[in-house]
Image 1 (cartoon, rainbow, N blue to C red):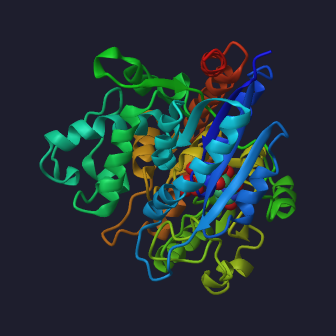
Image 2 (tube, protein in one colour):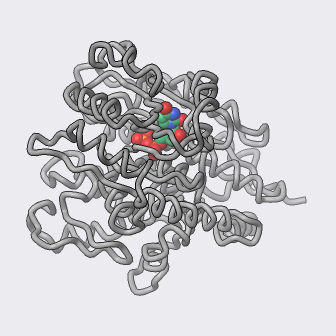
Image 3 (tube, rainbow, N blue to C red):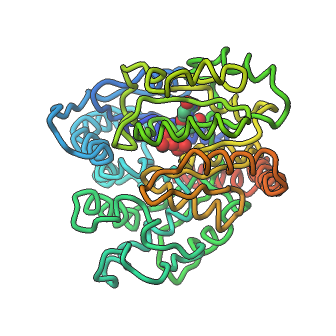
Length: 465
Ligand code: UDP
């Protein structure tokens, strides 16, 4: 009997990319009738975080995983985190080669699926004549932008942020240059060079799997499938989200507190796996939560001037000591603050949660949509401003607070926007639209749903390869 087809998955370091591709691997195996095998080769930057290790404990025994030897950067390196992540993959290529050599002697290797930031690893797939796919853990709108960027790069001589008209990305809501992903805000920088290279590599893959579904992003998904653009095959297979319990730090405290709250009364405040605010912005947010008088559950991180500073490492400082004097005492009947981490999926799934003030990371966005929770969009870095535009202008499922002339969202603005979301008619309308997205997402995942059918077709093609 022929051996099962074997797929190698290469994540990139960092919680939110790892969790997404791992959940994808689980779904792929689930829908393959035992005819596929999966091995995850995980590049590692410094040492794997406890959170990343916890994710792997949720893997079924049918999926093998290995952390590759760690790559280190000296502490003095000024290399941006996103670049470090990608360089860690590039420097792991010799280990990936070695692992592929070992695997190819005993199994029928057919394909490699690499995370967007790990797409340098696909060179190893080519060496073994494997099919090569990119797993894209963000929105179809971001994917449409990325596939379009090489053309924009040729056609636009200036910085995108200086364009007076919005950029028309195929299938997407028009977007001003300043709202495009962070790495393209300075075209002379190293980040831009890296980003453009990733976007060019997308065109060389045999296909791209995107964590989205028609019900949330019909326009971009339709555009991505149009033949005229000459794009690789795009497989919309979302919403893919955390399923295992993984990291449940502060879990019982949060859930116990939510149990005592009225349905739809609590605004959950969190900026993803590593987003941080400046000290001034942290103060204003605290002021606004208190002023709003609304119930809140806030995941607090120590402040930093760099918005993604906690992305790879959990912070050692006690974040609660950066809160304004007396804040915890004054708000003890109103809210709960927890340091650094909450069991987000369970919090969003709790009936007491009525709103989510989010940095608009794509996992957070999907998790909120799948629980029908309305949003306040507070983007920080990466492609989050673009997601915020889609959520606010396009889907109309988010309110967006305005920053003042100093670039800060003031306390009164925070209070106003939270009250509009939790108490206002606007909030209720957003809630209804979110409910529609939730239903559409659930439908996409049913046996006959669009995303399940796409995933099964993908698996069948690999099995028959
Ligand atoms: N997350 C969590 N608890 C937290 C903060 C984040 O479980 O306190 C999870 C969240 O559920 C999501 C991921 O971390 O799955 C964050 O991913 P996202 O794409 O939203 O943002 P990123 O971390 O990439 O900025």
